[in-house]
Amino acid sequence: MTPINFPVFVDGEQMIASVIDEIIPPHQFIFKVRFSNGYEDLFYLGDAGIHGGRANSPAYAKAISMDIDHVLGLDPERFYHIFQEEIDGLMTNVWVIEKEDSSKVYYAVYYNRLYRFELTRENSQWIVSTKAKIYPNIKFELAKKIGFLLDSYI
Image (cartoon, rainbow, N blue to C red; front, top):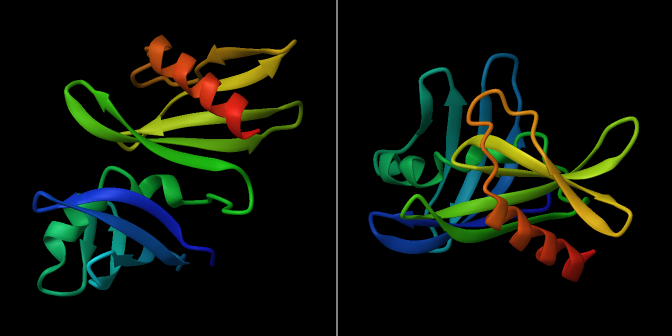
């Protein structure tokens, strides 16, 4: 698996978390995550949240808890980009992930564990929409910034 890297804070210290393996057994998702300080563990994502197998893992599990869901099904061979943005007063990882359905390619935006909105290119402009039933409010300034980002990358 190509590592998927994203910034995190572990007990106030900024690091990079690298998901280096994704294991999908029948009832639980397991991620092997290595942190830039060398710490590594298997993290289990289930109904009770996320937890690691080692004694020091709770702080690391908390650090990745708002982002690890976005790794599920992410194809690192397709476009994705992660950047930090202040949202509701907190530095937040924003994930922009290329998706495709039967009729179009679009760029889904996720943060704080949830899908938020998507951008689709139509007639040389970005159209912003959402399918979100929970928190369907689009942050249009953020969408505009992502449109500029997509213009520079794709």
